[in-house]
Image (cartoon, rainbow, N blue to C red; front, side, top):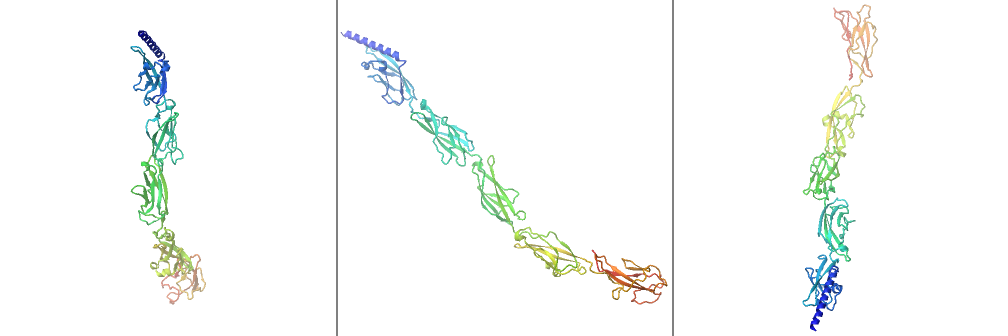
Length: 561
């Protein structure tokens, strides 16, 4: 009876083992399970017994268990129902191990028991349990402020260890740029490329900090952030600015060198050498710039005395030039009015003056004028004229008068060439400045003769100065018209009259000729005959020839120049 039972048991065990082995061999290449990662402990992977068609009544005795697979003890088989279970949750990570190959053993009920094995592949399907991870937590890049729109800066790169849509990443900017019309940077949502999107200005902002979010496309999206530090590099794109803080609109021409004309501040919004500024003014102007110790301000000062008579207004061009590349500059023009001071005396255009005046001028009428000029302006150039009575003498100045406004000189009396032929005096020109300045000039006056005197016959003297008769014989005497000599033209004869009368006419050569007349009586006498001294006859010597010569002496009271 026992032997029979033992045989039955042995036969059953053999059949079971064959069945299991047969089943294992049949499905070992096909039996695989797919589960999601991160399952909780105790979660079912698959029902091995059911999939193998095993009888659950004897399953406990068959001692199904996982004997090999992963290093971690991740799975176990429920011995009562044959369900493959997750034993631990945390190591069940697809990103760590996506495929697990398990070896399950079973034994039969024989003595000694026989065992069989089953290979099971467990595929771990992805769950979106990993956020994207950026290559760097902080990216740093430098860009010039004049970089055009579209300039490439860098690429933010993130990776996601999940798979499928769970690993697909989109990038977005999380920073808001306050006060800006538009975002200065753009981010490609697919590639993570960061580019310039607007105008950058170093003077407005030097550093931008951008938060970039990388998010996957899982059903429940996971994301991570990284920072992008963008440093804006200065370029020389700003001209220096000149700010006039103080200005003296007028500078006296006698202001000493070093007088401050204007104060100014100089700024450049650029940095470094691009913001360093040098100022200058033209070298040919009487001005220079004096910088402050910090070089941020300048004083425009005079470097020489100014001269209003040379230039009434100076246009001073101030040039501010930075040290950047390319060099940028700006200019500002300052108008400086030169205030006149009385530093110039009146000046006569010639010295001395020489005038010619006809005698017999009308008393009280102007005879000539003098004029002076003054380089100064306004009242400093207003001139009054006067006679220098001290140096000219009171006699001369007593018959002259000068108009103090225009310098016209009038004679208070009529001049007579025969009395005064020339005289000299001095005129003083004085300006109206404070203190007044003056200068003088010498005036030489020559009186011109007019034909206002008739000839005067000095000899022979007429008793009444009028004509006394006619020449009786024009053939006996001749008169030299230039010397006044009277000569006989022939010898006297007994038939000649004893007395001869001649009317002599004397004329000058004036424009209006003046003349005088005289009567000459010639008496013939015998030799050695006495005659009165009052006679106008000239006695000949006793032994002289009968030819007698008389001389008419004439004095003319006129001179022609």
